[in-house]
Amino acid sequence: MNTLSKTERIDVRASASVKQLLQEAARSHHKSVSEFLLDAGVTAATHALAARRQFALDEAQWQAFAEALDRPVQHKPRLKKLLDSPGVLD
Image (cartoon, rainbow, N blue to C red; front, top):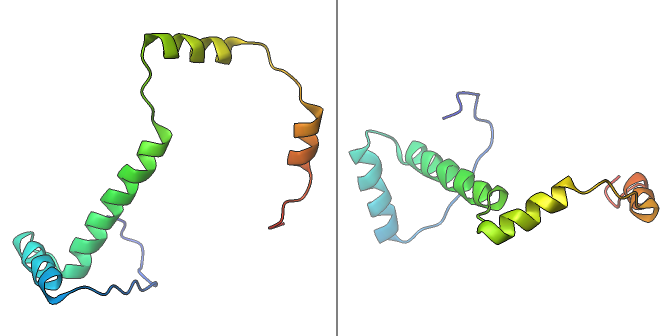
């Protein structure tokens, strides 16, 4: 877990039974409920984001993907113009 100073709060509402379950689980790992929830949350978030970055392909899909990567670059002036222009958050 990250050892940087913790300055932000995360508030969570739970039923009494869920709170008790979390307390028991935290105790079994010799952690506070906050530590337990943060560890579990960071692990879940890491896996959720990794799932968006990784994908599995069968042989035919892999071949098509590799061929697409190997094709020469196609210049797209309209796309370049769009990406060079300021976005709504700029």
